[in-house]
Image 1 (tube, rainbow, N blue to C red):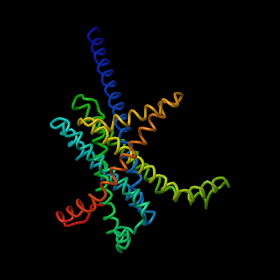
Image 2 (image 1 turned 135 degrees about the vertical axis):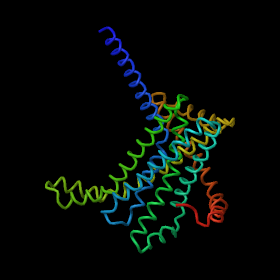
Image 3 (image 1 turned 180 degrees about the horizontal axis):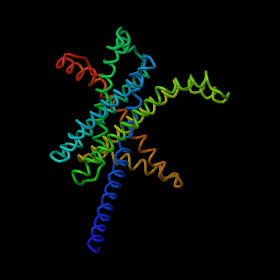
Image 4 (image 1 turned 90 degrees about the horizontal axis):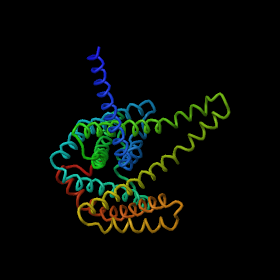
Length: 322
């Protein structure tokens, strides 16, 4: 009997350790996922455009195909690459993170420039002119998965940088939870967004109560504005996250002047309103990081469009990737 009790004690101890490990993984994944929120928001803001123009019956299958591609990107390619990077070349994490941050700054600045200086998007017009719906779907899905790969790489790199140094299994489990969790949240949200107008239309036409019909009409009328708001939030998040990554990366690499400037100004602004010092300091920091990201992105636009894109085209025989 005493042997059985000792065995039960050992099992209970192992269970406690396992539970603590699960808690640690979930806690670290939550913190790492929060760090990657900017890229995840942009992912959610970008994806709905890929189902635009299709029959309603094809919208959810397309989202599901993109989600599967995203999960493969994260689990089969990016997670092993991130673990190998952490194990064998951790010195490269900060430069790669900054490269991804620069990409976010460029994408955000390009969207801002497009709003300030509207111009016809020849690629979109050409895309919409494709006559074969099946060919168009394949093209859209492939383009969405390529775009997702870039954003997922940024998400996984940000998450990797946010995970405290630990065991290989802990890092792998945390990255897996981040990858799966963000994919479910992003594409679950996208699925709800792309079907919200259909649900609203059904409620408006077939709602039993007057209130139900009013809510349905409100949803239908409000979706275009909501999508614009989502795009705006996604752009702001890209610039904020991208700028903060660059500022922090420069500090890690020994050029701390931008980080010190942002910290000192934000602290001074927080001191003006002591009752809300934390909120004011955070907002000021995010705003300055965003402005820095926008400035960097605007500088990168001519470099990318006039140097990198033509070079990419000459090497691959294709235009800039979608």
